[in-house]
Image 1 (cartoon, rainbow, N blue to C red):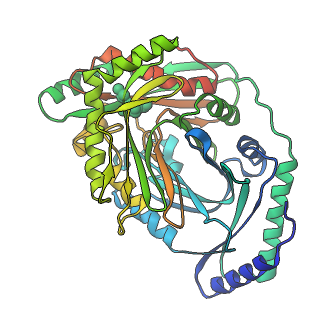
Image 2 (image 1 turned 60 degrees about the vertical axis):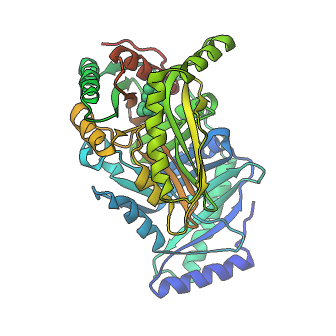
Length: 468
Ligand SMILES: C=C(O[C@H]1C=CC=C(C(=O)O)[C@@H]1O)C(=O)O
Ligand SMILES: [Mg+2]
């Protein structure tokens, strides 16, 4: 662990202080090694000083894990139109980033609401229609590299070099103190009460949706429902995250804290990843359960690969993402037929889409263009959104919306926040939805949502629940 500032960083900091005095919005950062601390340990240990200001991102295969603590800066928006995406990008680009040559770019972590035109629930108010944090401390565990932490400070133009230096030294000491803290053991989740809401209305809405589809009003709509949990004790997000890390290894495990709320989930569905102007998206739609033996699992996989209703659900997603990404890439690579993507609880039809990003495009351009894909909204997009507004008895908040991270060099990744829950104090709301096409059968879609609720139910401490 490095305890001094280092000569080159002193120069870097001095020039940052000067730039800030000229009126630039400067983010100065320094990256130091981070030895002996796992992502979960960091998340837990940072809770003492930064509860409500932590973020966590662990993709499938855990290639690059990010954990942030402390809100050094917030970029957020209440904008209800699609310009919310570019508003965030514009604010991010206002920063002048100053860092040592070998230090990676600072990272912004956060996400967007599903539908700004139906987003007034008090539970979600603080999350807004777009909200990102620039963490004070951003830890990074990258496969094949030593873990490190980027300490980031936004200068206000009034600080002297001496003040800025003292502040940085204090932050380096804070990181050292975290490493020494022992990991907090997970307790067993407390007993809880489960409530399922509007089940009959939800089942009826599927009948209405299939009727509208058969009339030709639209091709597909994704309808979601929520269940809520009340516990005798405050819900332990750290322990839920621990379970998701262990049980949901093929999903993006994320936490976005915001004051007393935590949005947590394990979603298998990537929306878009951009690394060095190469983009990767994924179509994930069409679902079947896992088998209890290898043989049964393969049989279920085969039946999903040949099931017309699920293939139709999936094909609309491929069609829309292909058309959207064609505008941002000259050559896209898309397999002709879907494959299978497995999580602990379900199997999905899966089509990856890849290509290089055209010059004038950016990560948030693509997020704006794709959200919501027909895996979360429907087709045509606007008609499906209207139907969701009309038929769903709840507000989605950030459920099924893009969450992720981006750096200052155009790289980043967003997933869609399904298999997720909003946790606050003693209660949690869990969400699950299903792609409805003309042949959807309400009871079967209901069973599908039950399987999709399992990862979060397991993480929060209960696997079973009964319909009320
Ligand atoms: C909307 C959800 O799942 C989507 C993603 C994959 C498969 C889906 C399906 O088969 O219906 C859904 O489109 C959810 O889990 O809440
Ligand atoms: Mg489905």
